[in-house]
Amino acid sequence: MDLIHLGPLDLGLAAALVLMLAALSLYLGLGVERRLLLAALRSLIQLGLLGLVLKTLFAQTHPLPIFALTGVMLAVAAWEVRARQRHRFRGPWGIGIGALSMFVSSFSVTLLALVVVIRPTPWYAPQYLIPFLGMLLGNTMSGIAIGLESLTRQACDLRPVLEDRLALGHPWQQVIAPLRREAMRAGLIPIINAMSVAGVVSLPGMMTGQILAGSPPMEAAKYQLLILFLIAAGTGFGAAAALWVASRRLFDGRERLRLDRLDGV
Image (tube, rainbow, N blue to C red):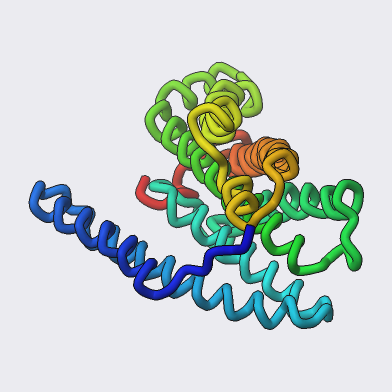
């Protein structure tokens, strides 16, 4: 089956639905119409620019511009992790925790998938590297952001309890462990829900795209399964790394709770 190409009018009709939703938000007094329109505009600009960049990358195989794009993707994802938290770590830690944890998890899982499972030639072929890394970074970013938000919010809400336990001589690892476990569970909920309803309630994005592009449904299903498993691993490992670093950062060398290292406290 030939690929059906979309024109400006087709996208314009879909965009009109977003405008209608913004109008509904204004009518109901929800106050999200500006954010909704801004998000739609950002997606239009960002995806349009990405399409132009990928068109150039796909035409060559030099690794330098490919790796440069992956670095930009990581930096933006780390910034978004920081932006989604109410109580952010001050200084370079605010963006560094997300960047480090996503680099360790998403990049390593993507590398494993490309080198061991898919094995394109070269292994950094942008047709495979950029989409795989993008899906992993996007989902890992959400899991890490949710986990960090849960950890810092609980630490602020339970400050008297945590300080009392520290005063009784409990080590900081034991004091923060219940909060870290709860934050880890929160970070894993989105991907667990996505895997639970995949193929029953929802048809995941990669599978949908491959089917629309003409791939056999079973081949599309296998690729989607691969992506779901990689996302689950990347999210879990990334959230675990981020929460461990964040937990350690909440205490100093004398095992005192240091919420002054967070903004808005």
